[in-house]
Structure formats: C-alpha cells, structure tokens
Image (cartoon, rainbow, N blue to C red; front, side, top):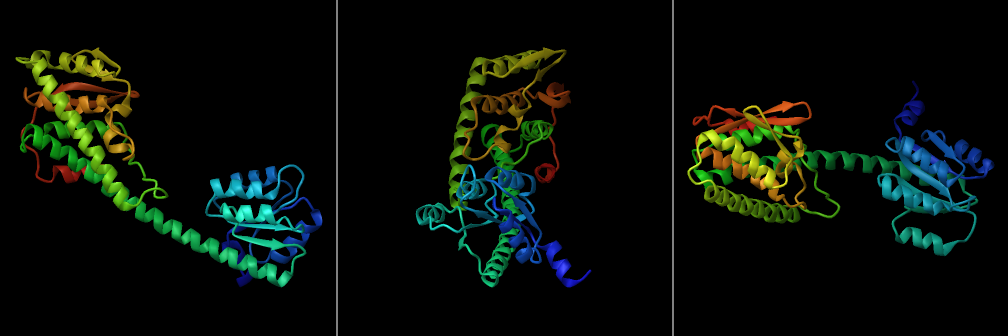
Length: 333
C-alpha cells in the first residue's frame, strides 16, 4: 500500500453537499486525494449522510444556496448532533448576514467563497482535517478522563452508603450495606456521566454534596418513622412491615411466599446510578431506611433476580464481614 493511499484510508471522511453536479466533480477531483469524500445534493441528503456516517466524518463542507433549505441549516444540524465535525460553508453569493450569523452561532469553522482557488481550497481542507484529528484525540482523552471521574463518583457514593449506615445504626453494622449493594448490582447500575459542557469539577462536588445531604436526611427521617411505627416488632412480621412500608412510599410490591417482589428494578439503583442533578426520591430513601431498621431486629433480606423483577427473600443475618468487603463491592460496579 503506497503512502498516499494509507493516508487517505486513515483520514476522517469529508462530506460535501452541493446541488451543482459540476461543483461536486470539481471538489472530488481536488480533494479526493486528501480523504474519502461523501457527497450529497441537498440539505436532507447531507443530514442523512451525517446520520449514517457521523462517527467517521471529520469535515462537512456545504454550499449555501440549494433547493429547499439553505446550507447553514445543515451546518446548524451538524453542530448540534455532531459537534466534533469541522464545518465549512461555501457559496458564490455575498450573503454576508447569513454567514456572520452562522459564525456567531458556532455553526461554521470557516467560510470559503466560490469560485475556489484550488491551492487555497486544498490548504483549507488539510487544516480542517488536522483539526478534526485533534478533536478526535481530545475527545478520546476526555472520554478516558470522564470514565475515571465517573468511577470515582460511583465509588464515593458506595462509600457514603457505608458512612450513613455507620452513622445511623453503628459502625460495626454492615449487613444493610451488603443487601443494598447486592440489589443495586442486580438492578444493573450504570454510573451516570456528568454533563461536562455545563459542569466543572467543583460544580459536581457541590451538586454531589447537596444531593448526598438530602438523601441522608431522608433516610434518617424514615428510619425514625419506622422505629416509632413498629415499636415491639419481631422477626415474624418484619417482611410484612417492609412490604407495607415500601408500598406506602409508592413502590409496586407484591408478597410471594416468605418474601416480597418489586417489579421496578430502577428503585434499587437510583442513588448510585442517577446524575447529581437529580434528587434521590423518598421511595429510594425508604428502601435503605427499611434495611437499616431490619438490622435492628437482626434480620436480613437477600435480593435475587426474578425475571425482570427483584425478589427480596429472608436471609441469614451476618455480623462479620472481611475488612476489604466494601472494596470488593466497588470493584463489582
């Protein structure tokens, strides 16, 4: 494979949209050696090409005047859905108002007036392809960074569950944490990625702090209510009491044998999986408060998958756990 062909195959594709067949041929002949060129003749065709090949496209070049919508509409569409694509507007007309508006709104990177100077056009496209490569590298590094921060956030939330349990029922009581995390794993928790376009790290810390504080307060309130409501409760009616409590909080619960079944798996994953901007519901706080209350009766539940639902079955209450048990759980998420 010669060097020119290797460069072309490794380069991100260029989409060129123009309703003039002559301009399309001219562009392909001038630019085709730099990168693969995909062509369309209307805004709708350009949108379809982006939707089909957006992950492989590095540069979008669009003529302004075409039948139907103007080219700046296609560039706006690309800026909203495929922001990594370098966008260039080209036209033979002096539509300065629309061009300035497109630049100011961030819809285009460059404006190239027709007729083209081939040398200048190739230089512009080379620079656009280089910028596309830099954006691709930046996005990859950002994804890696976000992945690390996302895992750190999830690990911090897991640690907070342990902290809340220790603060409310005692540092040696780990069983509720065990049950809570086992249910969250079954619910397939997916850590929510922060929107770094509107958040920086200090914003995230502030949002997490406010959310965690509200969650802890809700748990303490509901734990106190459970203790007051069920003074003198025994192991024999513990499952029924939890079922009634969860149902009263708004969760769909059904009794099945010695256990209970919840159809809504997301109820178990809310605190760990939802973004910091979304407050934790009362229902989820009641779930953890119920586990803390059960621990006071030396009673435990074991979550198991039951089709799309999760069943909570009576289980042996344990009092001893390995010192690295929390770290083991963190590795499972």
